[in-house]
Length: 180
Image 1 (tube, one colour):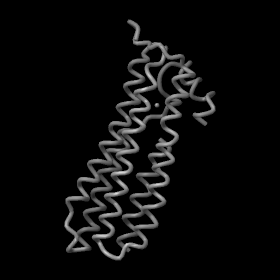
Image 2 (cartoon, helix red, strand yellow):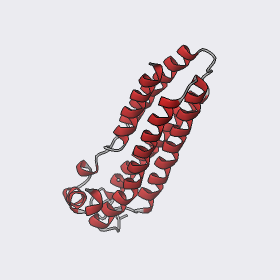
Image 3 (tube, helix red, strand yellow):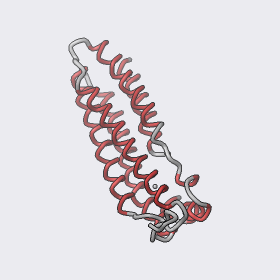
Image 4 (spheres, rainbow, N blue to C red):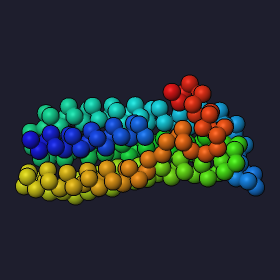
């Protein structure tokens, strides 16, 4: 029962992850389509990794017999999501700055979004790591609370590439195959 509650919360947060990337005017030197392609190329493996971690976590949580096993599985999952988010953030940073008005701001928004996602996973990981497992009921209740905070922090990090920046950048996100 408790494992299902944890798995459901985990699934919601992690699936949300996969749905939810200079001149004087703040424009960079990377063409909008090239920048969109680079951003989506960085985000695609991140989304796949989060989906893979979710699947593995569900399987592990269903087979876990103790609160201690569950704790280990959740901490490993959150560590993987934290690492994947940082890797995606570095990919976004490597994409440079799009050559659109406000490009610097847009690039910073994408990087900040992934930093917040990374930090949300890291905070949840540390919260679960600190939980005692002697009282299984209290452990699962506390895990539920940790995931409620993760969900809230993660939602604050969300950014939709198709609704950010200038029209030409939005168009680039809708046209580049890597973003579909």
